[in-house]
Image: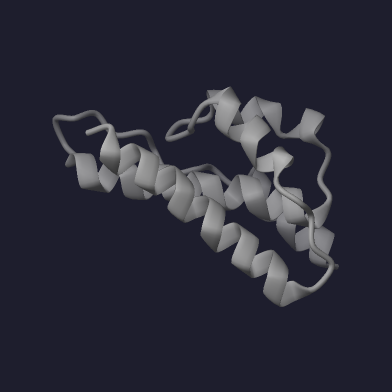
Length: 101
């Protein structure tokens, strides 16, 4: 059941990548953070890396390196630790984005 829900989430469109004309840099970093949380959620659910690499081409997506980095993080067995990994990775990607503005 959990994998089915996550699969549906992963197949849903990611936030539309915004041009700088209609979104602020802060909004763009927020979108990148949402994307990172989706990738790490897949990692924590045991979705294979090979099935996630297509996400680099999705609107609003981060980079292939960020997908690979998510899979370098450990996979946890308890829901609280999985949620913490998702939150931490989102913050890691957002921090990098804000610093590079």
